[in-house]
Image (cartoon, rainbow, N blue to C red; front, side, top):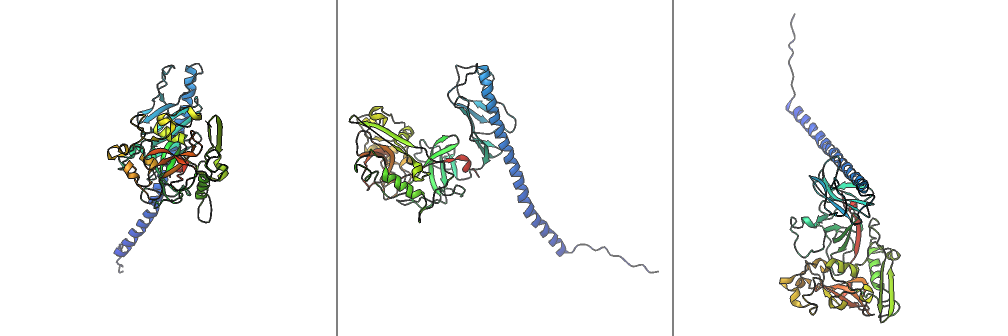
Length: 428
């Protein structure tokens, strides 16, 4: 009987290549999904840690009050978080703080960030905790972790990002489209600035206030043409009735028309602003209710400019005005003496304004230290009247000066918006 020979057959080169291609395709499909699953797990763990830190802060309040007969400081308590833990930075000399200088919690320790406890222990905020590579916040309601990417540059990272210039008082630079907060914006995809805009698309904002994990910030440019502060409401040359034309221009630039896209409903609605003052023994006041204009944006106030620049505010004239130059006007960086309001040499190359961001994109402003100049406008209006006259209101101009403009005038000043946005809406 003859035996049949059996040959062992292997894979051909084509078959091996086909297997390799199939495995590569599977890897291309599976690996990103696996990485996404791992990333979501890390993000969830970071959020759990943030919640745990908030819970530990709540326990801290209880422990503090038990140890201090129910007492708790009215001032804000700040804990700085590092790999060593979240350590109390606020001095509390009048309280027993034994074993109360640190928050105790389980989970990964943040590499940076802060916890604040305010309003006598009622408000607890987690601010920019860096956990597992994520930025985590808690606004008092919920924890959110994500990545600012390039849309937010914190002040401590300016040098690393080669951002130089006059940024005193700036907490962060934010790149944001006010009509769509989810849009990916950064320094490289900003809209082209003109003397009248833009008011949509990716724009540059300067955050100058951080409260309850919300940034309040002003645009780096005007969004309207020049406009009168108030030329038609009531007494045509009076500031008594507030900034009528300016508010209408703000409304038209930020709410829906055939040419304008409405700014996002996710922006935090501005509150009201009231100005009250006395002139020649007569009392005057007005209140701006921004909701009547449908605005999610508002004007910066004279009080905010004074707070940013550290100007000494006078109680004369109902509190609107400043001791420097008798409430007339002042250089944002301060005068060298009460007799010198402002001189060209103050804004010379050797004395560039450290508040240049407040007058960026005004005409010829580089002479005063601004970061970039723009033809067309000389500055922008605030929401505040000048209390010592009846026909002027406060504005910021190209010389780095907080000045007073003639309210019916339309040839010089435009509208620069202020918005408030939740930090959680900046995380992706």
